[in-house]
Image 1: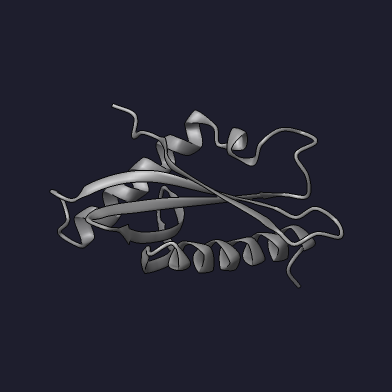
Image 2: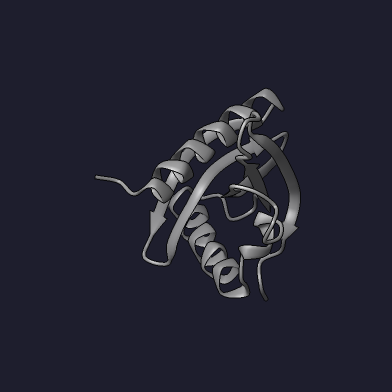
Length: 123
């Protein structure tokens, strides 16, 4: 049985995908996995291929969800994105990393924020 944390994460990913689609992103794939890790959402925003990390918290009491993405996690996301680009022959694609934050505060609808270009692939 999935944990409460994984159920909340799955819900956040569904909310994020719906929100991005409403913003005009063209969703390509969710939960892309490689040996380096997983990318939650891959979508086109215009002519830019975006690799989206979804983060959720129950409140902002302990900081912004985006702050939980360490440089190690960024590196793993970058390596996973490289695998995706290679598998799909998209080496010349214009790309960026976005973060979608979903805050689940008690008694209110989830708050969704999209941070475009939240971080860059390490050199």
